[in-house]
Image 1: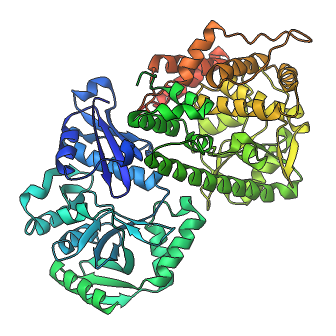
Image 2: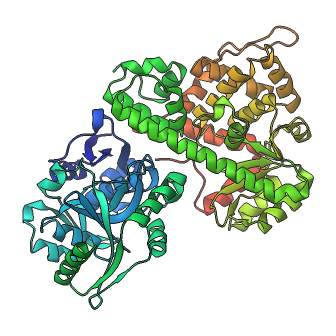
Image 3: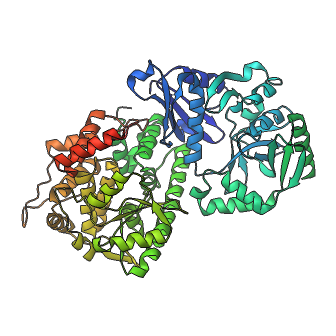
Amino acid sequence: MRHHFAVRIGPVGFRIGSDWRAPIAQLESLYAAYPKPYDGVPDFTVRLFAARPWRRFARAAVMIGGDYVLPEAAPLPLAQGLLAAEMGMNLQMALGQRRYLLLHAAVVERDGQALILTGVSGAGKSTLAALLSLRGWRLMGDEFALLDPETGLIHAFPRLISLKNASIATVAAEVPEDRFGPLLEGTPKGSIRHVVPDATAVAAMDAPARPALILFPSFGFEAAARDVSPSEVFVRLTQASTNYVAIGERGFDALTALVNSVPARAVDYPDTASAIAQVEAAWTAR
Amino acid sequence: MDRALDGWLLAAALRAPESVRTLDADGWTALLAIARAEQMIGTLAWRLDGVAMPPGVARILTDARASAEQGRVIALWEAEAARRALAPLGVPVVLLKGTAFVAADLHAGQGRSIGDLDILVPRETLGAVEAALLGAGWEWVKPDPYDDAYYRQWMHELPPLIHRDRDRMIDVHHTILPRTARITPDAVALLSDAVEVAPGLWTLSPADMIVHAAAHLFADGDLAGGMRNLWDVDQFCREFALNDRHFCLSVYERAWEHGLLAAVKRAFRLCHQLYGTPVVGYTTPITIDLSPRLSDRAYLRRVTARDGWGRATRPFTRQAFYIRSHWLRMPPPMLARHLWIKWRQGGAGPASG
């Protein structure tokens, strides 16, 4: 393809090809501190292309292709090319990843132990992960937890943190401007702005961590916390996994071991300050 | 790198695994992308087992093998589910395509990606089979009445069904070419020569497997998945010829009975040119000349139409084969009506991207 870029995020190598220069330039800038894929051979390919040749120029719309794609995915305007690239990478993982059991979760680490934050879209995973990474935690990822069925360890996947709508301002109050990507307005999920993980997250991304606590945060409620039974955790995590069925027995064994060995709590929070305090309390009490 | 970055790169790796030693990082990247696009990465992983390669590539191929192995387990389980659903009818379940290859433990099944479950049943049992599958949790996929009626009236299979819990499709065939096609294979012979490979599960005879693959490629389809189908044929030829020196001759005789000799000869010629398949021609008792034809070039151009990004290339060649597939499938007035209806619905056209 005309323009391309390769990057390794945690253990997974990607190459992104594009009919346009702009999204590649943004990726090069935002992923500048990241290494290249192992042996120069990426695990997955993402393609950003024009639906018709003339659409590169007129009413430019970015189609997302790659090794694995959802046929109905709608094109995005060229101004959202960076989002298209990130969506493409996430799609390859969601549909093609077979080495790790993928859990839709944010992960942060302290003392070699991993805290898994999972929940529905809008629960505040990305925001919490970004804020915790400013408070002594290492960011391992804001989208996928990579559970290795062989070892039971979580591998880091610290791609750009994807902040949406109100959480952009919340995080911008604490994170320097130069770690932010462009503001993408009018996306299918509202406003989106990407944040580059800090230097620690990138430097330590090859170090896995032992899972120690699973939290189910919910934003917009009075502060409350409760234990979650292993059976409920199991069901919620199977629903939060994009490849649980595809991995088969290995995935079942890995998830059973995780659920049996790691405590889980549900945490309702009204604001981020409260959430951070509740997370720390749950971590101490685990 | 001076080798072409198209399907020939994959063909060379499958044909001579040691040849990958000379690949650089970009060559490997292109090879893996093409193999994935052709749904042959599991096959490639099997084929390259034991060959020296960079650790980063070995990781990817190890994952591909594990994934194909899981696919095999799921495919066999789906076949078992169909067998259980149809057992009360006393109808033998004849497996077709990928599921058949793994059920019979054939080389062609090693690492093969398997999509839907395809089965063949006697035409007169279709109604009972359909009812039994609906009763066992399968549901209709095609919401469009035109499509549904079209399948029932003219196709060689029922409209596809999908299982409501397992989310897996089943295609129930009663023969191997559409009823609109000019060629009418002998469906009764396909069934009567089927081979039982596990209790209650059958496959086509070895010769019929090749005839079916050739029919699928050249008399029905637009050659999508051609590299994979030709690899199946290559592996059959090599494996079945081990126990039968005149296996190719048996295939020709069988193909002639089905009216598919031209398709089989075409498949053998292309296999030989693409994968070096040791196919043999004959001068007696029948004359089979397998020397390359000029038209083979167009077929190989279509079959290998991929670039190093896994993209479909050569749109004009693709379009030509797409049109040809419909031309073969239907008489002209029917084709005109079909394309008109499809065009109004906003469909019709080869997959692109």
